[in-house]
Amino acid sequence: MSGLFSPLTVKRFTLKNRIVLPPMANNMSDESGAVTDAHIQHYVRRAQAGVGMVIVEHSYIRQDGRVNKQQLGIYDDALIPGLRRLAEAVKACDTIVGIQITHGGGKVTRETAGTQPVAPSDVLVPGASEPARALITAEIEDIIEAFAAAARRALAAGFDFVEIHGAHGYLLSEFLSPLTNRRTDEYGGDLSRRLRVPLRVVEAVRRVVDEDHLLLYRLGANDYMPGGLTEEEGREAAKALAAAGVDLLDISGGLIGAEPPNWDGTTQGYFVPMAAAIRAEAGVPVVVAGGITDPIFADQVIREGKVDLVAIGRAMLADPDWAAKAREKLAST
Ligand SMILES: Cc1cc2nc3c(=O)[nH]c(=O)nc-3n(C[C@H](O)[C@H](O)[C@H](O)COP(=O)(O)O)c2cc1C
Image (cartoon, rainbow, N blue to C red; front, side, top):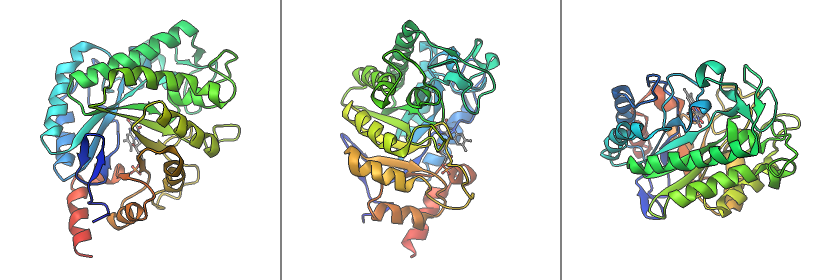
């Protein structure tokens, strides 16, 4: 079988199928950012239905990167035992599990982060409620180290992989976009300069994430905004990230978020063409999310070789048994 229920091997891991639970913030923590029983129930419930890969929701690497007071955290070693409980519970469901690490950049608020939002430049990031102040170089160094420290905690907790959040207008996506990165130092300017901070984060995290673990990057590959990151630039960025050590690219939108503008709410796989073009050039496996609800559609995307993995977000929130039902449906057709 070469479709949705065929295995996929990436380095030492063999995923039992091509279904991914993408990162989806549940805001089930208290203000410490700790894992709760609700998290464990939520992820185990979905993993048990037969998901090949689970990506735990965006977890903040530093207090000033927190977008929601109930957001999951990975900013302190004290959080490792809770994260370990989550990783172990999901792994026991015979799935590969990792966690997304993030800094909210200009999209935090003073209330959630305890300080003025920070971004590459003094801008009001699209979708943000407060203007951000530009990071100085020393602060950028600290944030790169905070990403690496968060990755170390993820591995200490027993996760199989780490996903760096570089999409949806959060900090690393802001560095990539010419709309939010107007820096005149080495971290701003043409694409190669705007890519430097994301690449430095990949390099720092890769030093922690050894060859026995995977490094994923969620790339916002197109801002869909006038003057923003273009799809062509997104493809270039994908190639550079893969060359820097990313094992698997997770393709989504940039400043615009997880949906393109004018999405009609029903068309499935809206990022598939963009992800397929990236897959053809980047030389690493690709996962894509976006409006996919029908197992037959998902199976087709895999069979046609457009991407390697499909992520089923809202459909799996709505129906935790999506994966089990997909197996039955495909077996009967
Ligand atoms: C409630 C909710 C929370 C989300 N949280 C995150 C997140 O933490 N990190 C992320 O990269 N994307 C997040 N997303 C985007 C999803 O991962 C996914 O890309 C998006 O929902 C499109 O896929 P779908 O149509 O299958 O739901 C979230 C989406 C939803 C609906």
